[in-house]
Amino acid sequence: MPEKILILDFGSQYTQLIARRVRELNVYCEIHPYNHVPDLTDEVKGVILSGSPCSVRDQNHPTIDLSQYLGQLPVLGVCYGAQLIAHEHGGEVTPSTIREYGRARLSELHSTNRLMKELTPDSVVWMSHGDTIKEIPDNIEVIASTDSVRVAAYKLRDQETYGIQFHPEVTHSTEGKRLLRNFVVHICGCVQDWTPDQFIENTVAEIRETVGNDKVVLGLSGGVDSSVAAMLIHEAIGKNLYCIFVDNGLLRKDEFQSVLDSYKHMGLNVKGVDAKDRFYAALAGISDPELKRKAIGRVFIEVFDDEAHQVEDVKWLAQGTIYPDVIESVSVKGPSATIKSHHNVGGLPDFMKLKVVEPLKTLFKDEVRLVGRTLKIDENIIGRHPFPGPGLAIRILGDITAEKVHILQQVDHIFISNLKKTGLYDEVWQAGAILTPVQSVGVMGDERTYENVVALRAVTSVDGMTADWCRLPYEFLADVSNEIINKVKGVNRVVYDISSKPPATIEWE
Ligand code: XMP
Image (spheres, rainbow, N blue to C red):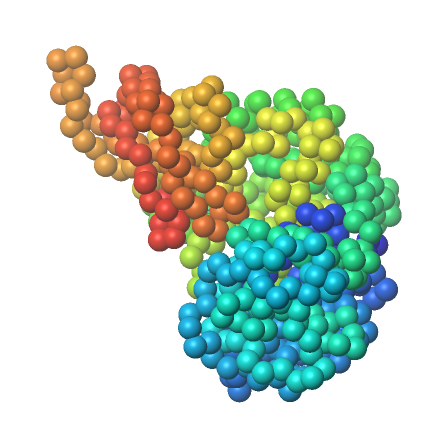
């Protein structure tokens, strides 16, 4: 097991970013809800306490027994984490008198302090807090301030316990990564050997050990996650991995065949299953987006189950679950509402009675890509945009028919191939076309037309949680629109979606 840093999550919106930054230093870390932390093991080299929307002044503020960590191993409290440690050591935390949100500059740096090593005076840091640490007892030493915050960073004098009021994990803190390096490398002593190669070596060995000579089934989707999971397991057990790639009739144009070919080329033992008609039959007449998702999920399970049963004596089900799917989010302010029931999580039902293997469940998406590239998976698979499980079904507003799918596939193909041709594809996080149920009047030659409106959507994003519409060049949009209207029968108008998320979402359904 690699050495690791534990991140205790008190509900901050930035907790995942802390993990990302630590891992960028080639140090493995895990996020755990503050009230569900596993026992310490020898691999744990340090602990980071995250921020929180709560205040230590609230009577029922989230807290932990700090004595199990403080003085035992290095601890870094960030924002709320820092306030919590100060509060429990007799410090006084009060509401900030001025709004402390945004950039600030560090002053009075104790450059001899190991956390502050090589940080430059006036270094820009990102503040986001409603409380501030006003008074501290003698056993706490201030190691940096800002204009409005005296205790911007501190150290407990007799131990390796630190607190910082700002957020080193956000990129606006220009030397935040250096500070985190100081903590995890110089203070915790981590050796920075968590690399893609190392991950592959460990994971392949682990899969061999757990799965042994058993057979494993895996549903490939054409996406990055399932493909990388498949290649890792393939490295470990070769032909005992049985991959199933289902054509649900809702994929992009020609995607089924081309992806199937890539998989075969990669040496995978893969079976392509044409189940288009089963999906179309189940979707007939359904317009409600959630009902579409449910129907697709149900048929997928049926098809997959039929196929999996043909693999004699199969014992394991592999899934491409990734870290953001499994991080238990901390609900310090009540449960958050379900906006869309994305079906990646949860996967297949218990009745399959298979044991589950999830080799990517500790990785973020960009780490999955790095592993995929190290495994030399085709760039055509690794670099592709995310594509929703229910596919074009949630980009056809209203009910689904084979004919509508055919129209949308052509539109989408023109859009995506032009993005690739002009080199814009990699600048976009996700792009696609939407077939609206709106018809509008047009004129072609001397004929009046009354045909469908399609919308194009292209967004920039880092994780899909928030997104902005992409400022694609007008010339590009003009060419794409022209080509669509000229070539795709049934479409006479193209619009471009200029909504950001929030308040819109990436998909229209
Ligand atoms: P939204 O529309 O919620 O999408 O902004 C965020 C990301 O999730 C994808 N998405 C889905 N993925 N099943 C999936 O596997 C779904 O039902 C689903 N709905 C949205 C969407 O494409 C985007 O990448």
